[in-house]
Amino acid sequence: MSIAGRATAKRRWGRFLLDLRAHRTARRAWGGAAGMVLVLLLNGCFRAEPPADVVIVNGNEPESLDPQIVTGVSEMRITKALFDGLIRLDPTNAAPMPGLAERWEVSADGKIYTFHLRTNAVWSTGDPITSADVEWSWFRALDPATASDYAGQLFGIRNAENWYNGEVTNRAAVGFRAVDAHTFQVELNVPLAFFLELCAFPTLAVLPRRTIEAHGDRWLHARPLPTSGAFTLEAWRVNDKVRLRRNPRYWDVAHTASEIVDVLPVSSPNTALNLYATGAADIVWDKDLVPAELMDALVGRPDFHNFTYLGTYFYRFNVTEPPLNDARVRRAFALATDKTRLIGKLTRGIGRPASHFVPDGVAHYSSPPGLGYDPEAARAALAAAGFPGGSGFPRLTYTFFAASGGANLHGKIAVELQQMWREVLGVEIELRQIERKVFYASQSKLDYQISTSSWIGDYNDANTFLDLFRGASGNNRTGWKNARYDALVAAANAETDPTRRAGLFRQAETILIAEEVPIVPVYFYLGYNYYDDRKIGGLWPNILDEHPIQFIFKRRSPHPPSASGRPEKRVGRAATRS
View 1 (cartoon, rainbow, N blue to C red):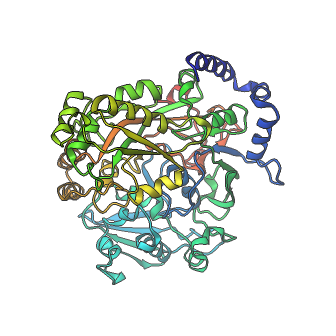
View 2: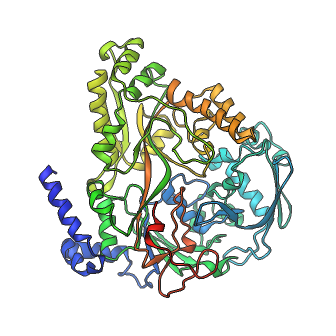
View 3: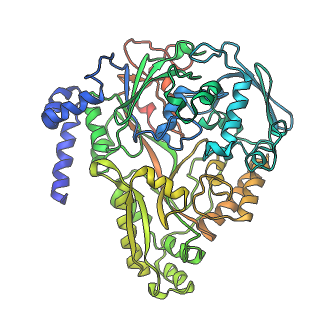
């Protein structure tokens, strides 16, 4: 689109979005019959089903709804609504709060946790949930046949990693067990400051053993599907919606605010905005669903909420591929990347330039400085690696995944990086766009050379970022292993003094971002979502962008229920933004 065309489009959308109450007029202007057909299909109006209480635009089509398989934020939002863990996260601040475990004790040395399950916790089918279900679920996550990328989250438990690697075969030697029907005990290798947060992560959710054993990989198709969370899975229609219905047997059903919630898979920012503006969706919550070209018009709106968010956009190298196995080459690419130019030109304020990997704002931690933009140093590093001025450098590929709607920020960033590296280093990089599912499979198999990447913090601790690149991490996907780095991360997690712990993490991050450079941080995300808080309640800004579906509701009375069970106190709009 030309500059004049973009300006015209921005003015048109700015006028279009000024008043959502005029959505009927907007719908007529949107695209006539074709637009109406799309809205009707997404709302299920051609099916004999009741309307949803709340409709949420959630990003990409789920890869799976198996909590121990999923890796994407969009899938995890749904799995958390279906399957509880021992712990869940408070919707107001993302801090750990009781889930299936109503209480717990921690030993004096911080290594043994004893959880007490609720006696009124049952599956949606009515069968009791017991400690044996927790034990079976955790062993399933540790089974290499499950192929869970997050199995490593259990490696802090005594002998869990050895079990995963086949070095221990006696289940009793692994440090978690059902003591009795409602008591579950865990023994850690060392005290972990973030262990309760891990217990809230989908990998450690409690899953229905008999259903999984009876149906194998197709267990999610079983009906009725036993769930341990606030909702049951009423329907999953690919490229249409996931429909959730309140679980009447859930232990905390009194605080499940909506009967039916529809979650729509929409990956185009413009489509997402259209659905919201026409009233076909109530909430849009995905970092990629804000049209960058309309950011100026959106950012000042009262229903457009932004907040500090733990997320980093970066690119990674396959260090097993020559010449990317040379750290000097990787540093040259990093030093030739002008992150300020990328942010200013492409993201329209959806992020801040990143010279380090762990985002600012993580509890009890501040990162060391990384590599900035330095063309002369970049050329010197490449020359030292044997490629002066790019001479003799092979033609590499930069891989990114396709997005619908013609608004692929990953592709635009790839084009800019290609040009920067040509200008500064004198190298030629081919761009390779592939479908999203193929992209992630290719990363896992190291079938790439350089690729786009991002990481969203799973909990508020530096470890959720730095553990990612341990040699044994299933999410590493670079082929990079560094014994000193692994030892520093392990030592940090064994350290109980916050200051010494942060110092060890800083040493590890220095190796990652300044010395070895298997990845290059590009920018930190800012959290953005949009909803009208005069109409929608149960969402609070927090650093993990954690918004349990259980507490979300459409306002129908002046005193709707809150997460605490008390009438929600209405806050001013300024208080809902950061």
